[in-house]
Length: 144
Image 1 (cartoon, rainbow, N blue to C red):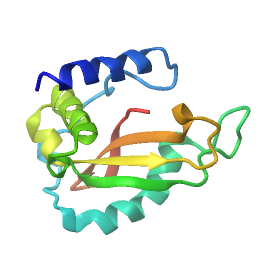
Image 2: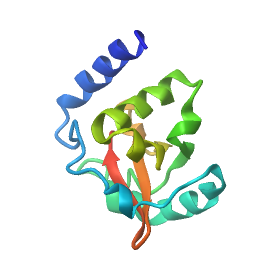
Image 3: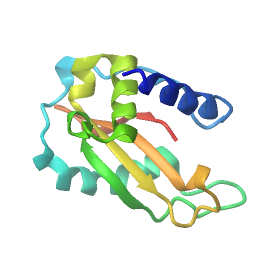
Image 4: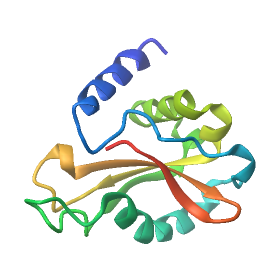
């Protein structure tokens, strides 16, 4: 736990300067509206990314108009399954800190690589997803 504190500080420090990313979600999902999830939902999550990524990232930025049109999934798993991976556990800690343990436990971490990106800062993406009983999959936080 002592090692997570400095890691979270470093992560937050580097993102506070970005105008594209909020340091916290605008609002947390409502627990009663979320479905219980399992690793068996991975295929469904991957399919949902075809809609969620363009909604979340758009297609590009001024100098790189198609930067987000192609992506590779680095990680797609429920937050509780991130145990044992220090980098992914740090995102689980963020999710718990932002919206509480129950929301985090019903959410997924999706880490992306954008191969058309010119540098590491733009090439990596992290999203926190959940599934609404009424509306399906949605992104409740975009970290990078």
